[in-house]
Image (cartoon, rainbow, N blue to C red):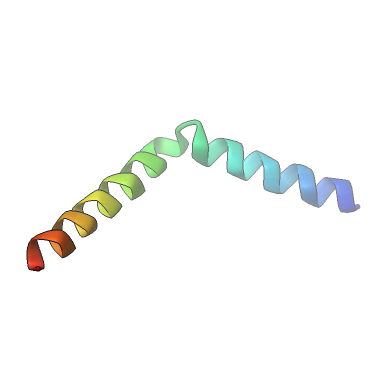
Length: 42
């Protein structure tokens, strides 16, 4: 049972990191935009 949960979590992480429909890239782009906005605010 425990290894099944670990395997499922691993599968989700691998899916997100290796594409996941571009989710990782979208999150990265949002972070960059937010950081640039904060930098320009000062």
